[in-house]
Amino acid sequence: MAETKIPYKIYLKENEIPTKWYNVRADMKNKPAPLLNPGTLKPMTAEELAPVFCEELIAQELNDTDAYIDIPEEIQDFYKMYRPSPLIRAYFLEKALDTPAKIYYKFEGNNTSGSHKLNSAIAQAYYAKKQGLKGVTTETGAGQWGTALSMACSYFDLDCKVYMVKVSYEQKPFRREVMRTYGASVTPSPSDTTQIGKKILAEHPGTTGSLGCAISEAVEVAVSTEGYRYVLGSVLNQVLLHQSVIGLEAKAALDKYGVKPDIIIGCAGGGSNLGGLIAPFMGEKLRGEADYRIVAVEPASCPSFTRGKFAYDFCDTGMVCPLAKMYTLGSGFIPSANHAGGLRYHGMSSTLSQLYHDGLMEATSVEQTAVFEAAEKFARVEGILPAPESSHAIRVAIDEALKCKETGEEKTILFGLTGTGYFDMVAYEKYNDGVMTDYIPTDEDLEKGFAGLPKVDL
Image (cartoon, rainbow, N blue to C red):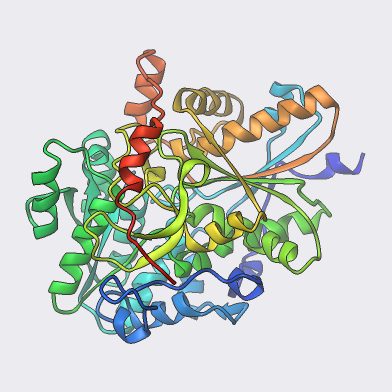
């Protein structure tokens, strides 16, 4: 009977917002492999990374030893605008599924950017301002990261140049306009405004673009423009560090009521949401204090974990960024123009890739019509229209809850609801009109990407 006392929404108090980020790498026995210089294929030094990234962010990127890193007071103050975010018990979804499972979700869409991305955007903008920079460049896929960064840059009076994957630029004009409202310039990628963009357009006429293409353009502009640095919304260690506030808050809220999740589920594109959600739970697992089943969910159209190779690869299509050891489909892989949005990246976080390689988490892929079926079911009973990215996690959470219905097991499920889908109505329209299709790359399609993997002998 005690479990019925758990409220629908669990809020922490303002003074319970984390004051330190948790660095899961400190507890990993097998550390993520180092970034490599694309010219020398030697581990990148802080000095070599300095022309691309902000100094303090480089220190965080390379820090494998400190478990906790202080969150600057200015960032803590900004967090108070929208944090703590609610942990919600999905009573209505449980009832609709007629499942004995207990389902919780951490909702990160209660800010103007509509997603979890603001957690890292404000940190990266803060460090850029602290360094005395004029502005930053970045890429964005579905637009959540670009929106969040434009907000953060506006707050710190920084210029913001965004290269938006062309298919999303066309599918999500209103997301683009939010960025412009906050003062950012937004360019569809690949574009003819950079040398790399021109090269990609020449090699792939009519391409709808990819995150790898947009990254290349953003980096080129950053390193060639005085007073600018490049910032990234996912994949990097520093981003997963900032996003650990999600998991730290979720765990604190569950601990209040003595709840321990059996299964933790997150959507995975580059790894920012998943890495942030699972951080403190994975820390307990690494230290042998508790065990959890952790599931990464990716689109079947861009299956980095489930069909990729664990190898060193370029983080961008133009091959100008450092090489990272990760599960990858090859930097030349151009995903289909579907509605997985921010999950359409060719590789996965080095940290998450190492954890997956070591068997500490699992991964599955889902097709987009099944994803939107789950999104619609969730919206109708829980009252939140979820982002397509988040809906990948919803799909698997529902599937796991239905398995509990079959077996009678009362498992506790936690998943991350990364944000809202109100800028994704073109995708919902296609699903409602019955014209949405599924695409799964063939082995031959994937081999084209694998063929371009660099030869690294370490």
